[in-house]
Amino acid sequence: MAGIYDVTAVVTGETDVVHTGDANVTNTSGHPYLSSITGAGCLLGSIMTACLTAEAPVLQQVQGALRFYGLAAEYAAAQPAVQGPGTFLPHLIDALSLDVATLTTWEASR
Image (cartoon, rainbow, N blue to C red):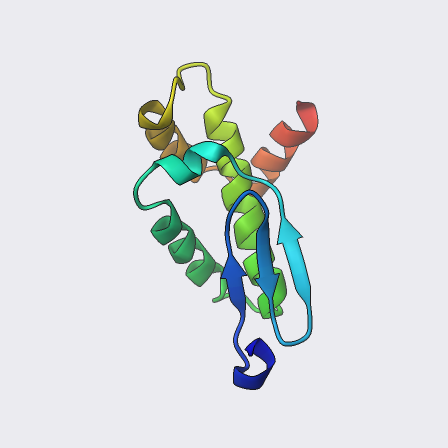
C-alpha cells in the first residue's frame, strides 16, 4: 500500500520497521522504558517531522530520526540516577538536546 499511495509507514517496537514503496529498513536502537512512558510515540513523531524538513531522501530522514531517538533513549537509561520510567523521562528530554555526534561517540565507548 505504501507504494500505491506514495507514503512511508513506520512501526515502532523492539525493532522499528520503516517501509516505503521501494524499501524496508529496520532500527534496533532504543530502550524498553520508551513503552512505559506516556507521549513517547508523539515525541518521536515530532522528531521525525522535524527531520523530514531536511534535504535528503525520506527513508534516510526517517531512519535518522529513529536512530537518534533510540540512541537518546539508551543514553538516558544508562544515567546512574535512572531507576525506572519516572526517572527516565527527564533524562530522555535532556538526552534529546544532545547532538548525534555526541550520542554516537557515547555509543562507541560502551
